[in-house]
Length: 259
Length: 275
Image (cartoon, rainbow over all chains, first blue to last red; front, top):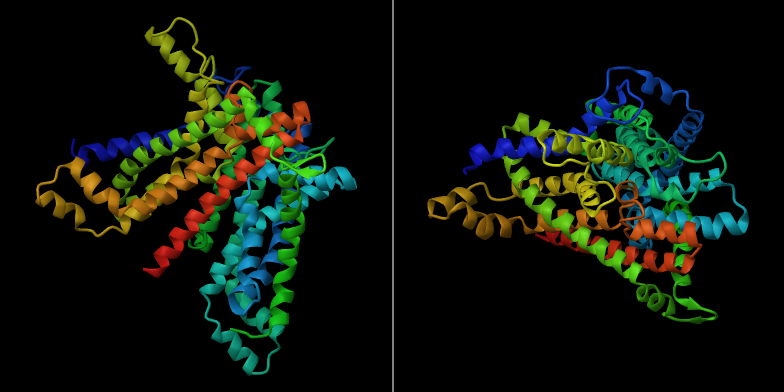
């Protein structure tokens, strides 16, 4: 078989395998039946509507949002200065520092969650929500440093040296010269961090307490006890949210340059 | 380059100290726990762990599934990447977008879809009964096959993307040259394409392999307690048996694998920069 015939077939099958399941979730969530099925039995929006009435989904959605927004913001507050130091200064132990801040990407999340539970939550009686917040901040930190560093490396460093020579303070040069130029990099880091944190499961697995759990964890436990299409509906809604965010980011920021 | 070291440290240390306290310290203590017995250093946790046949089964299964997913994703990945790089630039961009798209979707959602497809009343079973290939629903969920399919769907995009960039960096006329010289497609692949894209294959393979090895959601949803993998075993050891020593052993195995993979990727990246 020549590639000419072969290629479209391969693409059709592979893309179908990758994207197909997503359409099936969407279809299953629009079912009028009582259990999860495909093809859906009739059409209704009742399961989509039900998602918004499940109390635990609302609570865990709020927590996940809080973690994703707050954690990513905190990671940027730590990560932007660190990236700046890494790209513009002769930083002592630079490689060590770079390795330490990028560790959270390498170490599997479930281990981090367990370690935090065992050595921070249990012995010190640390608040679960606060621990989750710290864990999500650490998790996003490597992405923040990587994306902001890439953005800083694309910016010539002589413009801020010029600003300093012309009498600006170092901080002034950073806020007035550097920041406006890396704004879209920071926004890209925020979006990547948000999506990563929001979809994150393993880190949060051990870090749930009474009334406190993230949305993906809540979905996991919901689907263990119920076999109705509401998890499919919620999955579809979340997928549309992620795709929408990334699509807008790509459209307005050229997101893929940074990732 | 600015020379002020104190200023540099003041900027970088908060992030480093934060990561060290929230991240590094607890993980290191957890790993150390697996090497302690009473008050001395010992490997007894490891011998105990591997003397349990269930643990050995899970350990081997995790590696076997990881290797299978990597191998199959490499075969499919080459076919798909080859087809994509030969498209017109416009179509190529759209195809790459479709390959990246699933990476943006929560893996809970992506894995959940397979319940609809592979479940007792799922599409596959309905189709099989419709054609008369089977009278009763066949159990696909909670089998290794289901976990394999789920992992493949989760990580295939990473392999395709690495191979696309490897194929694009290949000299354009290498394949036509080999064809003109009389090589058949089999020879073209093994003698020309494979050696020239080896690096991309290793990068993609490492990402897929470590991803599969450290997956939690897919084995949890599609494998359950019937098809445990290392991460689901870890979760079960802690929640069911409160066995933190076994958890520490599993954590160590997973971390060593992740670091080895990461080191390999870093080596490749520096080797490429030198060229």
